[in-house]
Amino acid sequence: MTRLASDTAMVMAAGLGKRMRPLTAAQPKPLVRVAGKPLIDHALDRLAEAGVAKAVVNVHYLADALEAHLGERRAPAIAISDERGELLETGGGMVKAQKHLPDPFFCLNADNIWLDGPRDAFADLSARWDVELMDALLLVVPHSRASNFSGLGDFHLDAYGRITRRRSGRVAPFIYTGIQILSHRLLRDAPDGRFGTMTLWERAIAEERLYGLPFTGQWFEVGTPQAIRPTEEALGSV
Image 1 (spheres, one colour):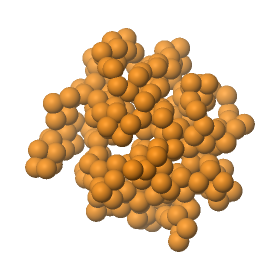
Image 2 (tube, helix red, strand yellow; image 1 turned 30 degrees about the horizontal axis):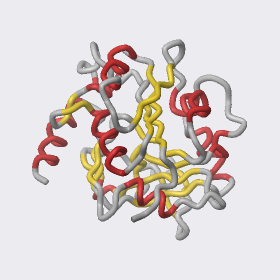
Image 3 (cartoon, helix red, strand yellow; image 1 turned 180 degrees about the vertical axis):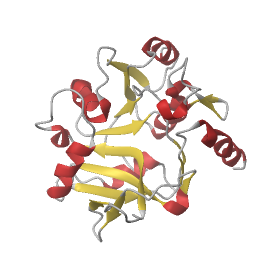
Image 4 (cartoon, helix red, strand yellow; image 1 turned 90 degrees about the horizontal axis):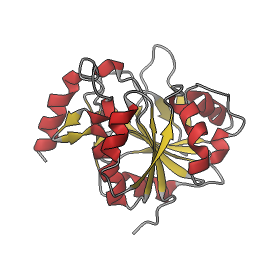
C-alpha cells in the first residue's frame, strides 16, 4: 500500500457557482445533489476512503448552509477557512488557509466526481510526488477519460511529466481534474488578497517545477445542471 504524502487536503468550496444556476440560487454549489448526495460529499468520501484524515474547507457563498452540512461529518475531520468577508479565489484561498495546512498538502475542488483506476487518485499522486523536483503535481486526464467535457484541454506534458500550457487556438491533450498535491514553496511570495492559482503555476512552469500525472480512472465535469443527468447515468452503470 502506498503511503500518502499528506494527511490533509484543502477542499475549494467558496465559489459562487454561477454556471450551475438556477440550482445555486438558494444553495451553494457543493450542496447540489448528484447521484443521491451533495457534490462535496463525493469529494470528502473519496478523501476518507483514501485515508486522508483532515479536510480544510473554505466557505463564502451561503456559508452557513455549507458549514451546517459539514458539521454532520466525522471523517475526514473538517476545519473551516472562513472567506465570508472576501472571496479570495483559489490562490488567495490557499494562502489564507496555509497555517492550517501541512507541507505538502492535497488540494481539490468541492465539485469533483471521479472513479478511480487501479489505485486511488491520492495514492497515485503520493507515489509520484517528489519535493526535490516539484512545487506542485497536478492530476490531469486525457479527453477520452473526461466525461461531459467539451473544451480544448489545458496542458501538455513532456517526457518527464513537466507541464506547459495550451497555446491559444490549439488543442491540448490533458485536462486538469481539479486535484493536485503541492508544496508551500508554490505559495511563497504570493500576491495579497484575491488571485487564481494560475499565477503561481505560471511561475512554477517557468522554473520547470510544475508537473502533471495522467489519471487512469474516469473523471466527470459537473459544471452545469445539464451535466448532472449524464453523470448520474454513468455512475449508475458501474
